[in-house]
Image 1 (cartoon, helix red, strand yellow):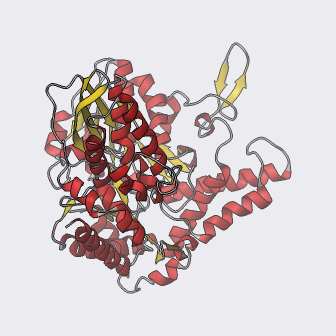
Image 2 (cartoon, each protein chain N blue to C red):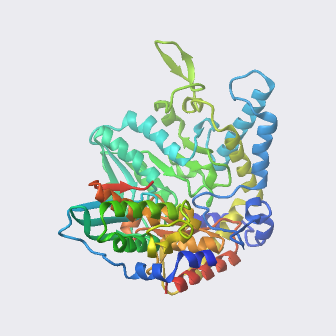
Amino acid sequence: MSAIEKILLETPGLEDEPWDVERIREDFPVLKQTVNGKPLVYLDNAASSQVPQVVIDRGSKYLREEHSNIHRGVHYLSQRATTAYEGAREKVRRFINARDVRECIFVRGATEGINLVMHGYGRKFIKEGDEIIISAMEHHANIVPWQMLCEEKGARLRVIPMNEAGELLLDEYDALLNERTKLVAVNHVSNALGTINPVKEIIARAHKMGVPVLIDGAQSAPHLTVDVQDLDCDFYTLSGHKMFAPTGSGVIYGKTELLEKMNPFQGGGDMIRTVTFEKTTYAGLPNKFEAGTPAIASQIGLGAAIDYLNSIGRERAVRYEQELLRYATERISAIEGVTLIGTAREKASVLSFIIENVHPHDVGTILDQEGIAVRAGHHCAQPVMQFFKVPATARASFAFYNTKEEVDALAHAIEKVIEVFS
Amino acid sequence: MSELSELYQQVILDHNKKPRNFRVMEEANRRAEGYNPLCGDQLTIYMDLEGDVVKDVSFEGSGCAISKASASMMTQAVKGKSLAEAETLFEEFHRMVTGELDEEAEPNHLGHLTIFSGVREFPARVKCATLSWHTMRAALKGEEAVSTE
C-alpha cells in the first residue's frame, strides 16, 4: 500500500468534513498581502512554508516573557525556557512517533541533521572501500556531505537510478546493496520532483543486509504523516521552516543505540558531563549533540507548529493537498507548450515544469509580476536537472492553505508567459 | 505590467530567440567561462584580440532570455572597440543596471544597450544581465573563469 493510500484509508471519516481553506488562510497573516498590486499567491512552500499566527505568538511569548538560556540557570526564567524547549522536543517525539524523547536532537534544519550523522556516524564507522548508497533525486544536502566523507575516507558513493517519471528503480537498488554497503541515505519526498519514495521498502531491504538508513524528511514531514518506528528508519531529519515553523528549527531523529555509539558533532557548552584540560566526558542524549545555545525561540515555534498541524488535522490536510495536486496537474499539463518534470505515480504537492523555449527564470520573473511566488532554478538538485537534460525548472509547490483559484491564477500567468515569448 | 514590458522588450526577446555572434570561435586567442551557480546560467566568451582592439567576439552557452540577449548585444557592442572602450562600456552598463547611472541624464556610450535599463527594477535579474559582461572582462584580462555569486 502506498504512503498516501495508507493515510487516507486508515483515517475514518476524512470525506465527511470539507476542508475550509478560507478559514485556514485566516491563520496565516503573510497571505493577506498584495504583491505588485495582485493578491499574493504563495506557491514556494517546498522552499519554505509560511508561519501561522499561533506559532508567531508562541515565539514572541518566549521572547517577551521567557527568554533566558536553557539547561543552565537555577533561576525562574531559565527554568521556564528549559521547560518550553524540552516541551517542544516532546511534541516532536509524538509527531514522528519516536520511542524516546532523547532520540530527537534539535538542529538548525535537515542539512545540519545530515551533517551531524556524517560527522558523528560516518567519520567514525565508514572506512576505506566502504560504500554509501544515495538516490538519483537527492537534494545537494544529501549528496555533498557523503561526497566529502567518501573523499576523506576513500569510500565510494553509489546512486540508485530513476526512470523518466522520476521513480527509483528498486531492482537496481538491490543490485547496489552488498557487503561493502555501510549506509543508505535517501529522501522520503523529492523536493525537485515531488516523488514519494517507498522508503519503508528501501529500509527493509537495507536492514536485511544489516545496513542503517537515513531518511531525509525535509519534504515529507510537512506533507505526509511520519512514524519512525513503523518505517524502522535509523535516522530521520526534518526542517522546521518547511513545516510552518521559523527558520533555524529542525530535528534529527536517531535510534538510541546508534546515537550512543556515535561521536559528538560539535564541541562546546551543554554537550559535556565533565571537562578538564586533560579530558572531556560527554553528556547523555540528546545534549551530547546540542553544543552551544540553540535557536530556542525557533524550536519552541516548531513545537507550536506541530500543535497547529494536529489541531487542523494532518490527515485531512494531506487529503486536501492531494486534491489540489490532482487539480493543478490536470490544469497545468493541459497548457500547450508546458511539460511536467516528475510524473511519479505517488507524489507530494510539488509541480515542476518547463515551458517550451522559455527559461524558468523568465517564467519566475513574469509570475512574480502577477503576485505568484514559485521557485525557478535547479532546486539544489543539479543531478536531477542533468538527468532530465534541463538547465532548470519552474516549481510550484502547494500547502494546505493554497486554493484552486490560486492554481487557476498560476495557469493564467503561465499563458501570459507563453504570450510574451511567442 | 509596464515594468515587465520594459524588461522584456521586443529587441531583447528577438536577441533571445536569435542570438547574434552565437558560436564557438576556433581562432579565439582569449576565452573565458562565466557561471552563475545560483541559477545555473553558464556561457563562454570567445575573443580574437589584435593588439589593443577586439577584432571579433562570440559566445555560446545557456541561460535565461535576459542573460542571452545581454550576451548577444554585448558582443555587438564591443566588437571593434579598444580595450579601454570595452572597459568603459562594462562600467557604464554595470552602473546602469544597478541603478547608479541614469542613462538619460548622464552622457554615456551605451547606445542600444540602454534597452537593459529596465533590469534595475528587478534586482534578482541584475546578475543575468551582467554575467556576459563580467565574463567578457575576464577574457580581456586573460582570466579563464568568472562566477557571479
